[in-house]
Every structure is written in structure tokens, then in C-alpha cells.
Image (cartoon, rainbow, N blue to C red; front, side, top):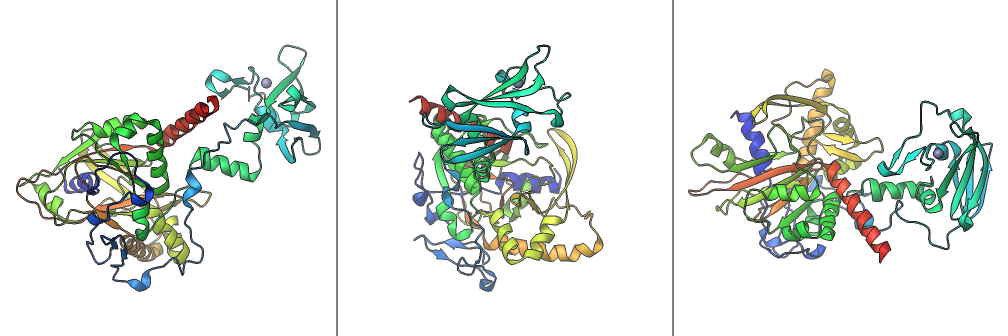
Amino acid sequence: MSLLRCVTKLTRAIGTSPQFANQSTGTVPLSACFNFSNLKRNENTHQTFSSSGTLRNASSQPNDRETSENRPHSPRLKSNDFVEESSPRHNPPTSRQKISEATFDGNRSRVVLHVGTERYEFPAVWLRDNCQCERCFHGGSSSRVLNWERFDVDRVKVTRVSLLEGGQSLEVMWSEADGEKDEAHRSVYDLGWLLSRNFKEENTQRYLKEWYRPQPIVWGVEKFGEVLREFSFDDVLRDDAVLRQWIEALIAYGIVMIKGAPLTENECRRLADRVGFIRKTHYGEEFIVKAKEGTSNVAYLSTPLQMHTDLPYYDYKPGCNLLHCLVQSTNPIGGENLIADGFYVAEQLRQFHPDEFRLLSETLVDWSDLGADEAGTFHSIYRAPVICVGRDGRLERINHSVPQRDSHFSVPIDRVEPWYRAMQRFVNILHREAVSFKTTPGDILTFSNVRMVHGRTGYTDTAGNTRHIVGAYLDWDEIYSKLRILKATSERDREQQ
Ligand SMILES: [Zn+2]
């Protein structure tokens, strides 16, 4: 096993294994979920919590800290941003909601509806594209089957709009002939269906937040005690409501602890199967790491693992880490895991060091991994910034791994030194905002690999120590998908009650 491979493997498997004394099962109230007594201060650059739960600032650079007091535009999101129950997709109008008037605005080619005191506009071209008749839409697959080879935006013409079922649906007649028949094409839209897709900004934003991706709630070190939630492994496997709570907490805070998993090597898979399926990488599906005395691995096991994200050299980087602790190091000194919210660190940079934020979000870095494992030999390269920002300005992904940052740095030479300075700032803030803790056997630490940055302090191995960790990945596509299914199912159940 090459040195790089060792680092990679250990980094992935051992880099996070916190320890909690609280072995309670079931969901734990947000305010009471974290056992502060196991939080330890490990280095001068990290903040930790005292046993009373009060914050002790251990930073050696107090002047570098942006407090909430001097934070002019806090990027933080409110905690209720991710748990709203209403659904724009599944909120049919109440029996009182009816279209009182429907007209067609020929100048703007829009259908205008009045519902109560509200006015809604729908572009004719969108209505035609989304006709729900069986010639245009296949209900069984929830798919549009309209023939787009013949679709002509300029020839979409509304000839008549009218109300059906006392205003609970809208009928639109089109100028185009309906296939072979001589009749005009006719579309009927349910009012609830229309309203849930209306183009008002508050509605599109609500849809994106509730059904696309709930917003993360970023947190600094002083908030960790409030954000880390625990769920019972049995409850997550058995109860859909708890499964949903775990996923929602994972989306919101980026890290969640699962407690009480059996001490066998198959539990990450059982957890992953509850959501979707394990994301395979060139290291396989599950990775098992046991500390072995007297091997070349031991030196690496004992040394600190720098904070990092896993597998930044993947275009489709595995989204979420599952790390199951079967046996923890018996040595009470060292071996704590470090973890920080990379999104929070990025927001700190964006707000207080915008030039450095720009450098880290605009400079493509070469990430790479070269080696061999169970899936054969590999040479992976992917170029991406340390801070990946979406078109909407939101943070999408953090990449940081010292061992896997390539010596090839494919940027203009003048960019090099400023980038290093910006990176130094990023790492300083990262360590300032990192928490440390250890897992106990039966814990499965779950955290976002596109958001959280994790590592491990050094420790001294002892005789008979058989630290044993099993890890696996899940992809966010599957996690979000499962959340939508759970939401839709619970809403259906509620409507049927
Ligand atoms: Zn149609």
C-alpha cells in the first residue's frame, strides 16, 4: 500500500470517530443532544466546550475571530428554514378555492386567473407544453410525451379559456388541430396543480426550499452543542418519521450521530440501504480499517490526520460519509476527531475576506489520486475550486485535502502565491471553528462530504488496541430523493386521515 493510499484510507476511515457517553436511544431534543463532558480541547487553535457547556475560546488568535456582534450581515439561516410542512406540489386548493375569472391576455400571450383576491398569470407556451391530456402527458411515468419536434412557440395560440367544475379547473382550447381529428386541441388543468406551479417568486422559492433542496444552516464552533443531533439506529431503520428527521438534520447541519448500531460490519450497508444504496468508489463499497500494531500503518494511525474532505478528485464526489465505530482506541489521550462546517468557514471568508473568497472560489485546483485498490488501478484527476459556488451564489461543495492536492497547479503563475495566502486564511479559520470529540462503539457518525471538513488528532497506540471502523458513502441525489418520497408519503397519509 503506497503512502498516499495509506493516508487516503486512514483519512477516510479514521478521520472521524467521535465519542459520546450518552447511549440513549431515540431522538434527542436539540438542546440536550450533545454530551459536553466528552468534548476536549486538543490544540490551541481549536475551541472546545467545557463540561458545563459554556464556551471556552482556546484560539490563540483572538483578533482574527469575527463574533456575532461584529458580524454585519450574518449569513446564518434560521433553524426553522428546513422543517416547514406545507408542500407546493401536494397542496390542492381547499374546497373554497375556486377560479373566479379566467381571461387570456393576447398581447403577452398569458392566461390570467383570479382566485380569491389573488391574480395569477401563466404563459400560454408553458400551458401548452404542460398539457395534461394523455396525448401530451403519460401519467404512468409522470412524463411529458408531447412531440417537441413539432412544437412551435410562435404557433401556440389560445382560442378560448373557460372554467370547469365551478372554477376548480381551467379549460384551454388551442388553435392547433388535435392530430388526425379535425377538433382543436383541448387542455384541462386542475386549480391546485396550477397554483402549486404558479410563477410568483415566493412560490418558486418555496418549492425550491421544500422540494428541491432545503437550505443548510451553517454553524461555527460555539453552536456545535446546539446542532449535533442523535438518533437511535433501530429507530432510523424501523420508523420512517425518524429516518426523515435524520435526513433533515443532515441537510440542515451537515452532521448527525446515529447511536446504538450493532457491533457488526454490515451496519453501514443497512443504514445506506434504508436511504438508497452505497456509493461505490475505487476503494470499493465499504472500507474496513483496524489498527494494526507493528505495521507500517501504525505510524500513520498515530499521527495527526489533517483536516480534509474525502475524494476531492471525483467529479461526482461521494456526498455523505457513514463511519461506524465498532471498537474505539482504548487510549484516553488523543485520537479525537476534528470536524468543522466548511460552509460556515466559506461564509466567514465571503463576508470578511471577500478577495480571498474570490480566489478560493474562482481558482481551479488540480485534485488527484493515483494507486490501486480492489477496483483495480486508478489515476483520478478533477479540477475544482476549494469553495464551489452555484449559479445562485449558494455554496455547493468544499474541496480540501493536502495529500490529494496535486503538485500540478494549472493556473497562471501570478495566481499562485495569492491563492496560497487565501488558502492559509481558509485553513486558519477552519481550525478555529473545528470541534473535537470521540465516538464510542455502536456510533455511526454521518456527515456531508461536500460540506464538512474533518480530521483527527494524533494519538499513541497501545498494546491490544484494535480500533475498528467501517465506512461507506451515500450520494446526495439518493438522500434528497428519499426525503421527497418520505414527505410525499406522510402528506398523503395526512390527507387520508
Ligand atoms: Zn394535450
